[in-house]
Amino acid sequence: GSITLFFGGLVSFALLYSCGTLVALGSTLFLRGPLSQLKSMFKETRIFASITMIVMIILTLCSAFAVRLCLLFCVLQFLAFAWYSISYIPFARDAVKKCFSACIS
Image 1 (tube, rainbow, N blue to C red):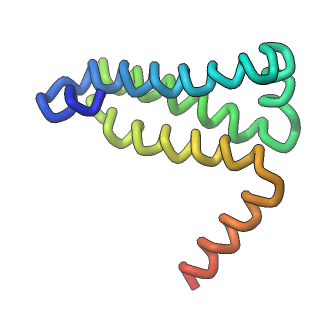
Image 2: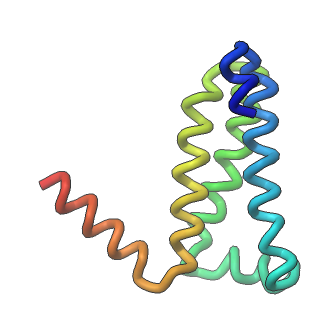
């Protein structure tokens, strides 16, 4: 996908990047099972992260075809997926929040 970005293929880059995110998300289905994974994704503690990640994937695909802001949405998709992944590590979100607040202040 990154190679297509250098050759100006924003649509193919957005498609491949979003497919890569979906494949990474789908790879956990083999570890936990589909039903357990879906239940875990939509628990109260990570429902916001899950919905944000899904919305960013959709916006990345839509922006590639309509608005051409796919690079911005790819970055936002990466951040949403990172936040979703961190939600599975106990106390990791609190540590990341404290780190950023310490860097900002």
